Image (tube, rainbow, N blue to C red; front, side, top):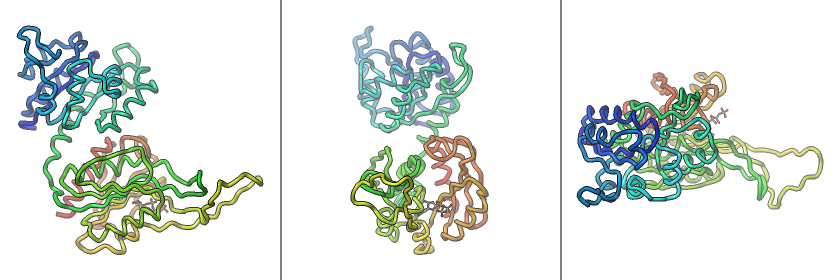
Length: 399
Ligand code: CTP
């Protein structure tokens, strides 16, 4: 972290006092720290503590009343390597979502040139409220990294989710982001599949699954951060990703996904297939909406092409292929069979039986098995950290 410039935004929640420890941790690691407080944060942590520990003046208002100088939000945005808002209150969160800008911290968020990471903290019911969930989801769609709140004793005396993540956890997220600039996949061409496929039954219905695409998108982001050129072929998902080294191709069906992969695979060095491809599709696609008639309806399904299997058949010795195996039973045995059958270098296994792993959630618990018979298991982690583990493993494997 030596020389990294960390801008800390502190909002008015009781957890603000913990930010003193975060500043200490960051300074110990050699980072430069500047703090911006919202006017209400001043009730929870003194600006003197923040300025003494960070070694820099603290920004609160747009104008410094003493000397009339201006706290320039644009300059803060240009200075920071990363903007970390912790604790993030429900109030500031909703203003960020709406693009409001009635204080220095919010104006700086809107001017930010780099990543914003937030650590929300609020009371149990506030954290569980649908509007909070909606705002957090929107922030993620806007490209903000959210460090989920912890469970435990809350300042109100209630027990449950809402505590700000510990300073050590926030430090890890900052280290993960700032440490990514090593470009160890510079120039590598990667194709990634992500999300579900939708197999059309008639003009209004399809067969699909619950895949959110999060794991594949996090892997794409990690490759881009490390210098790769990425083709991301994704089924329907709410996620977005923008990067000048990214070709984002949106498809719906397995056959469309296969056709994109067939176009690009021979030019790629690596393939990571994280899509939850529907194994079957309706044999016939009705051109008009199917009307209800008898009590029973039988839909004939036919097998979809196995995209990963196709890529494995075509794979040259200088290409590397990673598949995923989501199982509900006999995880290792089934994954080993897939690794061999599909001619993979590595298979990332996760079990739907592990809580916090699998579809829709922000965390995953994986094990990696490679075709040299090595097996490594990892802890339950945010999908961003899981993506880093997969790329680190791949880098060591390729050598
Ligand atoms: N996969 C694919 N095309 C398919 C099916 C799967 O590319 N038609 C890829 C997935 O993206 C994943 C891997 O194959 O990387 C494993 O998928 P999974 O559905 O778990 O395995 P299957 O081989 O389909 O076996 P089964 O459904 O019987 O478990």
